[in-house]
Image (tube, rainbow, N blue to C red; front, side, top):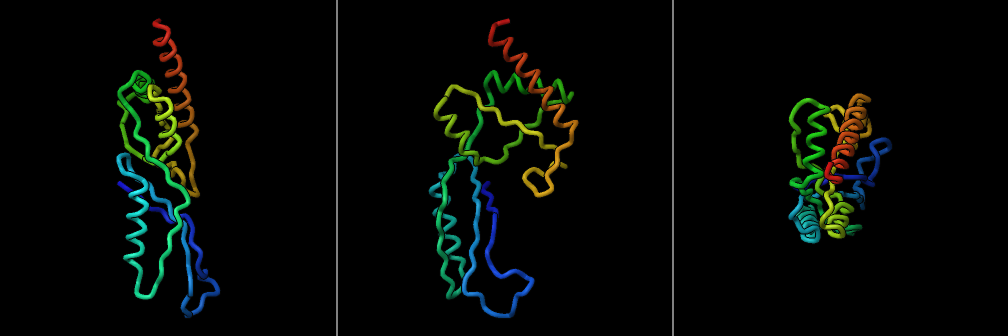
Length: 164
């Protein structure tokens, strides 16, 4: 589903603020959309929503900085199967699949440019990692486990490619 994040906001800070009407404020937003949603349509829909929700007398203007198409990974190819086996070997349990992100525009460009390539998005993201948060942290044992899974993947995928 779509997700909207406020990346920054310009308005009077709490410290030094007064009980006066502020003539203007602005915010920088990031809209993440899932695969299958047209990014131009989503930008228009968000703009229309913001303008419709504005209180009486407030003028809302929107500047779209960039449009990125969401990415949907193909999960039925040999590279994906090999990585799944490698991760299951390292972690000792079945892999859980989780749709996440959805807006990695570079992956969409690569997939369109190289349609036969498999693009695997893997990451070190145990729940305590707090990925993209100011206090993001990754456990060293998680980094080691993912490095081992990648090494096993390269070994096994290389063997399969050579027909060994």
